[in-house]
Image 1 (tube, rainbow, N blue to C red):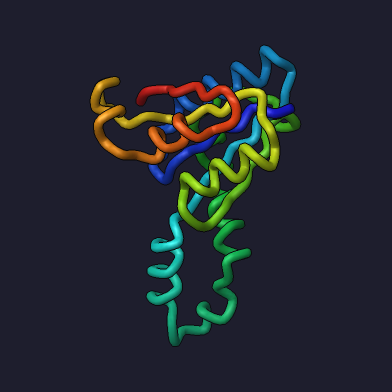
Image 2 (image 1 turned 90 degrees about the vertical axis):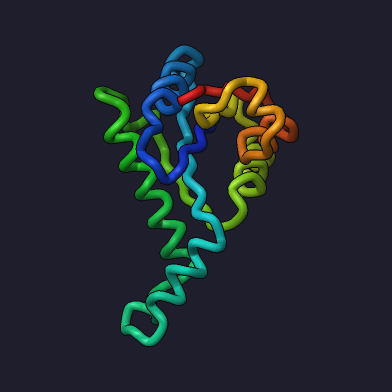
Length: 147
């Protein structure tokens, strides 16, 4: 099994990654860190490069590699010391909720660790968000780390 941790673009992922790594260490599991670039952002990046030589090499596969690199950078900036053999990073393109839930279905993690924006617990219930959708629809236990 694994511990799946989903991180956003902002590099304020310290608590999320620290918690994910603590769980992975405690359960002697692999930590899989996932970053999803929304499809709209992908389309904007592609449109901005249109007509340039870089547009020819701009593919979903390449953008998923960029998303994995964002996850890798978040790990390096968030965890002071870690066992690199225990940590794996991945990137996906699409709707963050859908991609996180698809990864949960694909990997069947022991836990999913996600972050909730700085809203109150009541605010998280009232206002729609990726975290709320994932909490309600994940097929595994979800740990919500508030930032």
